[in-house]
Image (cartoon, rainbow, N blue to C red; front, side, top):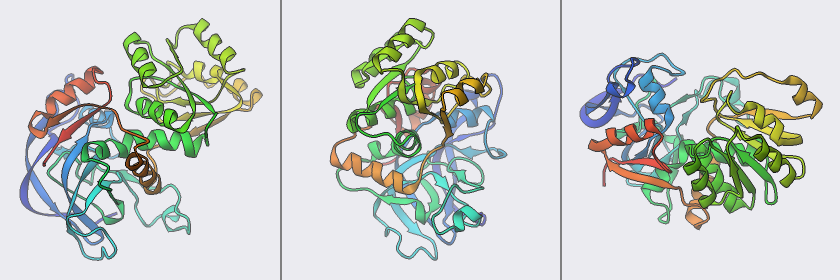
Length: 358
C-alpha cells in the first residue's frame, strides 16, 4: 500500500463530512480540503472534469469496501492534466499532459500483481475510498501507472465518464462474456450508468441488444439509444417473446440489478450462455436456481471495473468517433449537490459530470 500522503495547501472538493443516517445527502459537503503531495511512484492531477457514480451515494450512506473515516473526498472518475510527478515516475506522462485516470489501484505486492501477466489484485482499492482521496477535487493523487493520455479528439467531460460505468460495461461485454458482432445480449436495468454504456457499446460493436426496466420512459430512452427491444422485467409474455425472437435466448445477460431480475436472467440466456454479474442493487441473495444453471450449462461470472488496457481501448473508441458517452448534464463544482440529488432520484439520462476547472 502507498505510504501516507503529505499535505501542503487547501483545494476545493466535494466530500462526505459524515456517513449514514436517514438522509445521506445531508452528509455531503463542498469546501476546502488539504492538497495531497504525490509519494514515490505517484502523480498529482489537476482535475478538470469528474463524473458521479452510485459508488459515491453508497459512501455517503456509510457503505464501502474499506473502513470509512470522515471527511472522505468523493469520486472515482477524473480527467485533467498532470500537475506534478513524484519520485520514481520515469516514463510517466509529463506535467501538462491531458489524462484520464484509471480508478482501480492495485497493491503492487500480492501474487496477482507480481505475476508475469498481472491478474486481479488481491487487495485492490479505488479512488474515493480510504486511504485515497477522490476525483471530485481540484487536485487528486494517483499512481503514475494509472494515467492514460488523452488524444485531442476526446474532451475532458467525455473522458471523465469512462473509468467506472463505461469500463465496467466494456469488460462485461467483451472480456467476460466474449461477445462480438452478431451476438445478442440482454441488459438488465436500462437507465443505469452501466446499462446505458452497454447499450451504446453494443450498437457500435454490431451486437443486438435488448433491455429491461420497470420505467416506461427509461425503456423508450433505451430504444432511442439503439436497443432492439425493451420490456418490463415482470412481463412474462415479453420475456417469452424475447426467447422466440432470439431462437431460445440471448448469448449473454448483463446483470447489475440482482434479486429482482435474477430469475429472468437465468431464463433469458440460451443454453450454454453467460450471465455476467457486476452489481446487485435490488439485493445480493437471490434464489440461486442451481438446477437451471447446471442443466442448461450456463456460465455465471463476476466482474468489477476493468483494466488499464481496457480503458485505453475505450479511449481509442472515443477518439475514433465510434463511441460518444451520453452525458445528462455538466455542473460546476460549487453546484455538485444538484447532481447528487438527481443521481439519488434516478432522474438523469446519461452521466452526471462535474466541471472542476477549465
